[in-house]
Image (cartoon, rainbow over all chains, first blue to last red):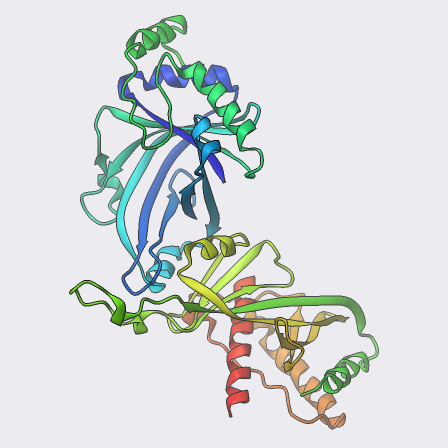
Length: 216
Length: 210
């Protein structure tokens, strides 16, 4: 399972966000270039399901992961916390995974190229912050020709694993961290639209001027 | 097929004198079946593909010496996928395929010079009926299949002679596999082992049917 929040930020403010995250996390950023293929079960299978195949193109040798994101936790406990708690299982797989799931009756629904960076650190819980642009491909699997789906806007996602019995503590750690980012962006449960934060421009300008526009 | 025969097979190995018993091993093979939609139950007018397009030869394996890995095999498609062990949890959540039969290959392993032998029975999970007896022979110094082919054949000849002298009912059958059909190379890997277990179970089922 995992706790997750999302938000959006204008591309022009991403550099400032990176400076802020660098200072908060104290770890080097990781480059993200992931080809994400969303597969859905075909009509022959009785139970509809969806998986994502992730091909990490940032490494010298591409590596593959299969991920299944399940339903969100419901009930009074879920409504009281500011993060989404959902099941998530992922596994490393060999590079013939796409052909494998096609053979099992899955069909490609859509594919994206996610480009950006991530910070992974420990702050009350192991937290991952990813900042990415989503890019679509004009031709099948043509990652070199990908163009932004929403030019000028990038997505920020914060996730933290939870065992299920500690989601309150993990959720609190994520929420606490989100407060540091509030001047630049607002993070909330996926599906809850919050838009651009009005203070983002001023906050970004402040961050850039304080560091001379340099990322240390 | 009985535990007595298995015990005599083990005695064959131990009769080689220098064989050192090294403990137990277990490999688990799962036969999956699709959870297919009933074509007659669809409410739409659009044609639904018959479930016949879904694979019926879908196997999963956990190898005794690779507990952190899981292997999926689609025999008709000549496809083997290696994944982390938790991929089983992912498949459970998808509910697109269910485990129908689980078989355990388990027994004792012996070090015999440069060879590692694993002798064991094949039993269905939660059942005592012995489905078959199998032996895995590993030649430790080499990982090239071509280079080790002759010595493996020589060992199997010696083994068959020992079994014949014991007057055991039945015989060990070595089914040759064309690993290249699955895109595997000459260097031996756990994927090769997984394929051999899959072939073993197919051979076992064919023998039972005949």
